[in-house]
Length: 311
Ligand code: CP
Ligand code: NVA
Image 1 (tube, rainbow, N blue to C red):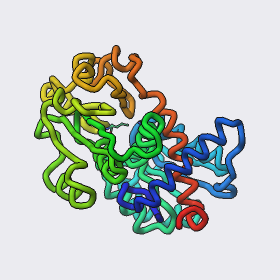
Image 2: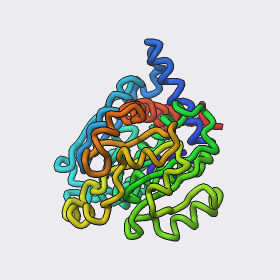
Image 3: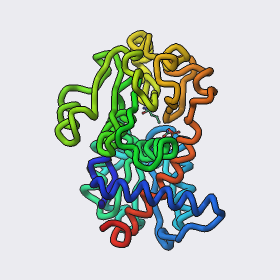
């Protein structure tokens, strides 16, 4: 694995190696042991075109705990694609630092950074996908249901967005059935479903419009905002379309009693999820957020120490 711009950049073996490494590094940290400094003498630039709490802090802390140096740059400082093309930024940074973490609007910018530079590029969220979030989410499933999550079922209620896209692919690859309940115009298109079914198995991804029916066999219920960063102009239209797709006590009542609730955060309480569910005993949203730190560490350790960790 040279880059991590999408789940597809990594083989199943590499993905499970990352997850296992993340769990191992988390155990060391919990035992108050220092992790091996795999990033010693390495610097990583982080470019954020959009706001961030979890991703920014978890990457900076992960780089610090692995012995590296993080340089964070805001959108205005870099002007990716405006002041300078992503291709030129990539070639400049490749001669100065060891890796790039980037949160961007257009996914193409990540592809350009990876294509024109010679250092690893990590997708810290684009309009298209968010593979780092999927790593932490699958760690959270493993925490709850045991390391082998194959055969489990996750129902995603809401917008088929960047978070949903990466999570669906990682779940299906791990053998977790991914059911999506969305208004049809905000669901995955046929091509996405067909490709993922062809790559994994037809049973591992399904669209069910009715949220109550969709959660009937769920081990986990997942939601995210209906209005992703950059879609603020569509807020009114989306609020209308997603009426009835809220994760609330009524929806939980239609799910198995052991089903947990997940959200990548930030949450818009009262829209896609209620306060009651966020604060309820089935919510794992803060475990998920904490797993972002460990997930980034597993990813960084594998990307920057590839030869030793990946067969
Ligand atoms: N879930 C997540 O990535 O949060 P931030 O946007 O705060 O980084
Ligand atoms: N889908 C959301 C995720 C935020 C972490 C967004 O892109 O804004």
